[in-house]
Length: 294
Image (cartoon, rainbow, N blue to C red; front, side, top):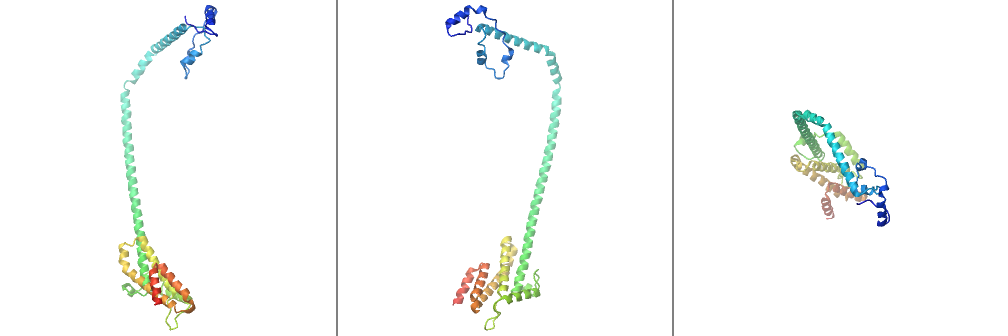
């Protein structure tokens, strides 16, 4: 018969077998030993080294414990059999309740989907209205810019004394009055070094010429913002080209006069070249200078 043996050799084990009748009877296995979450059979067997019991006796004890547990489980089922039956009876007819809940949920789902569709339609409607508002605002800004452009073109034509149909009807731009313009030009003329050349020819006012150049450059900036291909701007192009040629002619005249003003010649020449640069007409400035050398 196999038994747990303790000692340093097999011979000591034999002596132990002969005296095993005098050892205490091992206590029954505790059921709680098998309930640990980390239960491990090898660890469990290793913990039984202090039990004076053969392996066969241990197997029989474990089988007995298994049979006891099976009997307890069967008794538990028999004791609660009526409860199990009543539970099944209570669940009968539950399909109708489940179906009713399912129908209610489907109806609720349809209602939620309908609300979501309405919200999405409203969102698209609001988004479309916002886009339309942005377009209208953009069109309004373009319209205001075009009106400003037309007023500035007419103002420059009036100040440069360019003859056209609108000039015969008088200025309609929202700018300075004739009296204010004359006072402004007179103040500018007063700052020029010389009022006229030695031969009595009146000098071109650099102050007035600078204002004309700045107003022309501002026209070009408006056209760039709106888009130079805009039909209205294309229609105004002949008038703008005439304004440009008139301003360039005045600049050429001022540059020619600068060579006859004595000590202020260099300063006046640089001022006129600066106005050429503002207009982006460096080539025209170079051509005018070459003509002066001739």
